[in-house]
Amino acid sequence: MFTHVMIGSNDLERAKSFYDATFTALGGRHGEMDARGRLIYAHEGGLLMITKPIDGKPATAANGGTIGIAAASRDHVLAWHAAGTAHGGTAIESPPTERPNGSFVAYLRDPDGNKLTARTLPSK
Image (tube, rainbow, N blue to C red):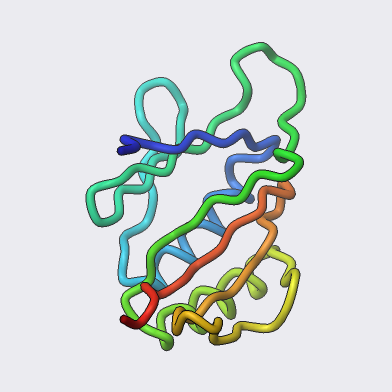
């Protein structure tokens, strides 16, 4: 359904350190800057793009918004969470945990305050 998610950052170098670490933990690659100065991560057919706001105002985190990232395994979720907290992210909600539906999930805020989750698919 979605082609990409775009979020704002006030410090693209800090964002690159955080997202390079978390995407590597999921088996992805480091981000690339495009010609327009946006940091782009491609992972399993989707794009996560990080940019300074084009209106010149400071980037702010969405209140109530969460960006969900698919993880292949529980180990990937744990590695993502560890990499994120080691690179300026903040653990939130609860420690990485299994949900009643069988999915394994972890939550972080990135250095700009955006709320992220990495999770495995629920068991059937």
